[in-house]
Length: 139
Image 1 (cartoon, one colour):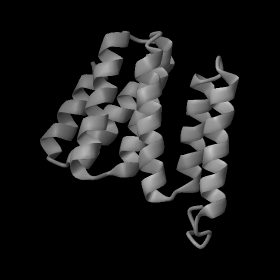
Image 2 (cartoon, helix red, strand yellow; image 1 turned 180 degrees about the vertical axis):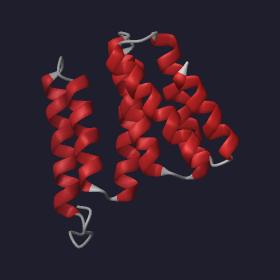
Image 3 (cartoon, rainbow, N blue to C red; image 1 turned 90 degrees about the vertical axis):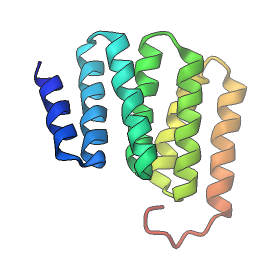
Image 4 (tube, one colour; image 1 turned 90 degrees about the horizontal axis):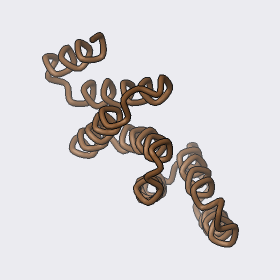
């Protein structure tokens, strides 16, 4: 398939960042197309692994969002929550408000059945933002 060819080309390039990007984008396409779930999850998990190994925190966060969406679609809510919370930890480490907001949104979505827990997660992030240094342009 074209996806497999893209992965093979990325691997031949030797650039792990490109490999992670291709894996992440493939997983996102598979999510949108509602393709074979097991393969899509494996691709997303590989993108997380590669991004983590090369220290690409933004790539890892993006891959974790794709993986969490796949887990949700596959009714693996515990895996989705763990993945979303890991993305939130990375976003906090980067002090990137946009990434924090997206991660909080995902965590709140996953906790929607437990309104109190969802509100606590949102309030915690709001408190962290208020207490943080606002000089970072990504915030």
